[in-house]
Length: 128
Image 1 (cartoon, one colour):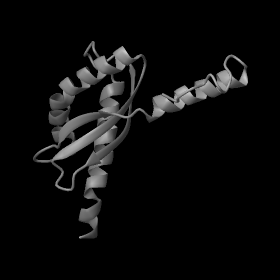
Image 2 (cartoon, rainbow, N blue to C red):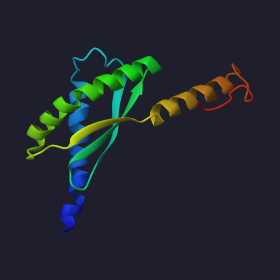
Image 3 (spheres, rainbow, N blue to C red):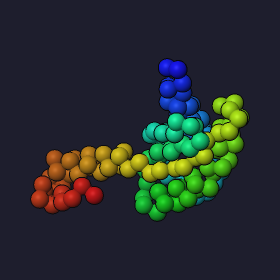
Image 4 (cartoon, rainbow, N blue to C red):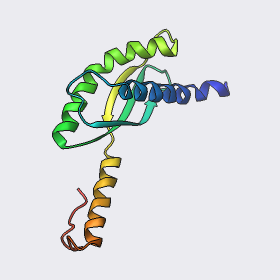
């Protein structure tokens, strides 16, 4: 029974690898314009649903467009995963935006500007 409790984690990692590879191979959807990184995958215990967290570098319009493209690719990815994972039913894929990498880049940019004197600490304002 112990091996069954780790199965969702193994499936999640396999999905993360497959989706990352699919995106790295060059998706043909023109809406996917930003740099997309798969940061995590969460799979339900029954293996029916998978949340794929992605970070998208670029402008807000690029992120929105890329998310639209990813949502439209979810069905194709599900059938591809079904073949590669050799399961009778691949999980339904749901993409979620993970803003942590973009937020970290923004904070680093603010800190660099404070350090070089471009902006003062009072001018840095909110981290958003």
